[in-house]
Length: 117
Image (spheres, rainbow, N blue to C red):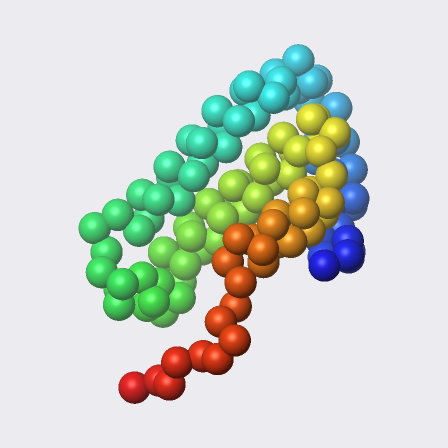
């Protein structure tokens, strides 16, 4: 797979940089701190799923308050991930394209799919 433009975070990176600049948060946005914040947010996202059955998880969208909380936590995870990549000067699109290519080699699709039951 040649590198395609699958993800363009340019505008989001700019907004996050401006947000941090306006609050003088540059000194706090070290890779270590951002990674730890990201882990914390992943934990908060995981907490939503904790103790739910798979069926209950599929019904989260039916509960506006719980679904709103889910959206917020997913957004927090994405924002910290994009900010971390930006601070590290990591091209998320290139990383994703590279990883997809490696996964295609590591996990080749079967030539013939087995019949479904």
